[in-house]
Every structure is written in structure tokens, then in C-alpha cells.
Image 1 (cartoon, rainbow over the protein chains, first blue to last red):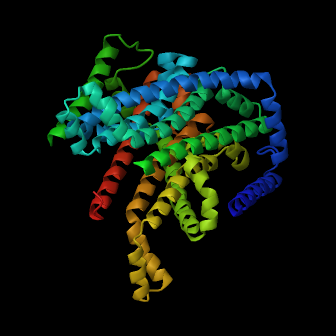
Image 2: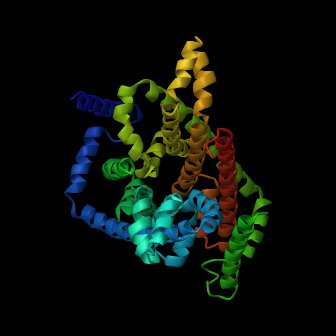
Image 3: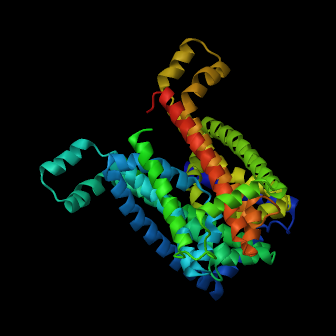
Length: 244
Length: 250
């Protein structure tokens, strides 16, 4: 009860600050909370908005599939050998830290405008955390567990499926959580530059037309989706880490 | 060099070699990508040009400003949240979900608020970096063993002395990790800002070169950017490892 009260108080404070900021900055930079919520309602009831949502969702889903499947396979492979892990760890860290946005012209030149470019953009954002955390998860499995698998003469496929994956699951899920959110980020960035539909495209359009309420409404909606989705994934993640 | 180091160097050089061969033999069209050797030549020429030096300086100073703001603000926010658990309980889920939000979406708003100059670029860099610092400051303060604080109390240290001589050093490894993440996020934020709607800087120079189909300039700039960022990140990565080793964490 107390918690809920604090939460409500916090929300109220944020709304108040927002309104104050609006009074100071004016409608060229910001729309008031009320106008923004009206724009949110308007968006949610427009067909064009949902068409863009489904375009983004398609690209995002593919980027997630590539990030997770590719990241898991590469991470497992590198995690199995101590040597390969040592060799690739700094390379992967360096690749992760590159501002991927500098690569957008390359992606565009290779894939052209459209779906492929968006998916590629989402994937290069999402795949690295999955690789790194899967690799670390497998590397940190106690040697006893792997020796036991060998003593039981499990085939490599059996070892991976019944021993390594379950043992590294908490790390893998953490990697997936970060990978999924970054894949969304990447897909949206891809749409800002390399698309003629989708939420990112809608956002950049509204910016170019100085349609502040729509910009703010999309921002608020994205924020809400990201926070709710992020918190749900975090809950699963935390439970796995505590259980293990 | 160790066997690991040699293998790593061989893989990196080999990968560059493969791309070079693909570009030279036309497997990759030269309109799509120029050979790495040509990128190096282009980068070398560009570094001698005044316009690029100005862009580089613009980007570097903005990024540095963003990092300083992110680290200081993030640290202060961490200390405040640590001192006010009631506030922390409300903000915690937001901190945890923060990096799931594509922060760059605030960029247009920042431009509208701060004007089309370097201020929104610095702001977005700082906004992106600050939470990593806050989260790690909190983690560092959380993990200070109770016995340290009790010892400080037994020695009748003042609160300020406890903070400076006990808590700060004990939290240092986490703070360094926070700085590391804040640096890399701030760099991403500032450069992304330059790409999206910018006035100057390397990001904008690259966008222009791309729009003019000037592949040599574009790839040259990309190389300069990526090499600079990678060197900075590797330097900090080593620094973090050194600190963690000294604190006996690795």
C-alpha cells in the first residue's frame, strides 16, 4: 500500500515536472501531458499507426530470431574452448562498444532500403550481448559438471542439451534480455534511416514535420513498451539467478 | 606475445585480408565497399584536412563533456538514492529498464529545447551514460562490507572521513566499471546524435559523404571513428582490469 502510494506520488511528480517544463519551453519543443495523451489516444485509434507497428514488429521479430539463434550458437562454440574464448573476448568487447550507427551507410549499401537493412541493423545490435554472456556462462560452468558429462559418455549434442545449456541458463537469459532490447533499439534506428514504414519512420517523419504532439506520443508509447517489456524480462532473469 | 595474442592478431589481420581480397576481386562491388587498404589511405588524407580536424575536435570535445556530466551526475544520483531508500525503491525498476528504452528518441525534443547546436549532442550523450554510472555507484555502495562501516564507527571517524577514507575506496572497482560503461554509452549517444540531426562533427561529415556517394571519404571517416573509439574503449577496459586486479577481484 505504502509502495503503491509512493509510486503514485512519483508519477504525479513526473507529470508535474513535465507540465512545468512545458510552460517554460513552450509548444515548439514539448507538448503538455494532456495534449500528448490526446495524441496517444488518436494514434492508438488510427489504422496507419497499427500498420507501422506491424512493420516494425516483423523486422524486430526477425532481428530477435537472428540475434538469439546466432548469438547462442557462436557463444556456445566459443565458450566450449578456453583458448577460443581468450582469443575472442577482447575482440567481442571491442565490437560491442563500436557505435553501430556509424555502420548504417555500410548496411544500406549492402542491403538497400527496406526490410533487410532494418533486420540487419537490429541483429548487429542484439547479437553481441547474447554471444558474450552465453560464452561467459558456458566458460564459468564448474569443470566437475563437464567431467561428469564425459564420465557418463554423453554425446556432444547430449552434453550441450542436457548439461551445458541448463547450467549456463541464467547467463544466457541475461544475454537474451539485453539482446532483445538492443535488437528493438537497432530496428528502430534502422527505421529512422533506412525505411519507408515502421515506428522509427513515423517518428522521424513527425520530427521533420515539427509535429511535436505525435513525436511525444510515440516517445511515450515506446518508453512504456520498453519499460514494461524490460521489467517483465528482468523478473524472469532475476528469478533464474536466484534459483541457481 | 602469448599464443592467445598471436592468434588474436592473426584472426584480425586475416579478416581484414579476406575483405581486402573480396573487394579487389569484385566479390564485393566497389560501389558498396572500398578495400580496407584504400580506407587507410583515405583516412590518412582526411586526417591532414582542416575541416576534418575541426569535425574531430567538435566530436571529441562534445563526447568529453558528455562523459564528465554523466559520471558526476550519475555518481551524485547514486549517492542520493543510496541515502534515500524510499526514493530508490520507486526508481529501481526504471533504472533496470532504462537501457531498454531507445533514448535517442528524445533527441528531437532536446533539439527543440536546447537549440540546434552542440548542447543537445552533449545532453543526449550524458543522458545515455548517466544511468550506467548511477547503477554501478549503487552496486558499489551496496557491496561495502558492514564490518568496514562498523570499524569506522569504532574509530570515531566523522561521516565525511568515513565517506572519503572508507566508502569511496571500497566502492572504487564498481565506480570504475560505471565510468567504463558511461564512457562507451556517452560516445554512442553523442555520435548517434550527430548522425540523426546534426550541425557538425564526424557523424554529420559521414552522412554528407554518404549522401554524395563519396565512398572514399565515408569509409575513411568511418575508419577514423571506429579506430578512435576502439582504442579508447580498450584503454579503459585495461584500466578496469588493472583496478580490479589491485582490489583483488580477479
